Image 1: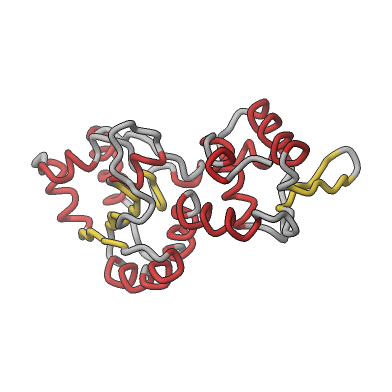
Image 2: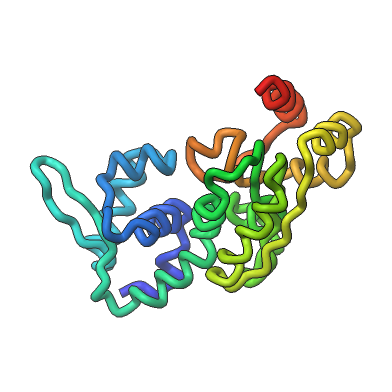
Length: 219
């Protein structure tokens, strides 16, 4: 049996485990996992086989021609692995859930947490570092309050940086150094900027932000 460090060595494997641990009773088919996470189906198949057949971490339930996968709660590493995954890889999902439905144009994770998720070699994320979150829109104060729950749940300090839409737009147009630095490396969109396509790290150019600002103002 592999140790936790080896089990979490693959980024795809970490993301698959996070999805399954966050939806334990529901379970997922391989194509659902591929679609939700944006991982090629071949890679999903390979990781699922290792986790189920090689490590015994997943249980597969055949329903017709498809197999529904859920975590194996009887595995000796289940509790420890679940806790570690949800406190690291599961951070975006936890924060997105807390912010869902609030009047925000944009919410994203930036800084070392996002850099680690993107696999940057110079990431300073330690697994216990603070989580930097950027909030834009009329609901930022409510969002800041909503993040107190995840802060306790994850055992991590969450540092929100909040802007009104007008202030954010002005700073982007003026090439504010803090924002330029924040978007120079990958961020993880939680609301807006393609967050519906999966909580994956991505680089967002300034011209994309300027275009989105026009759309938000029209809306």
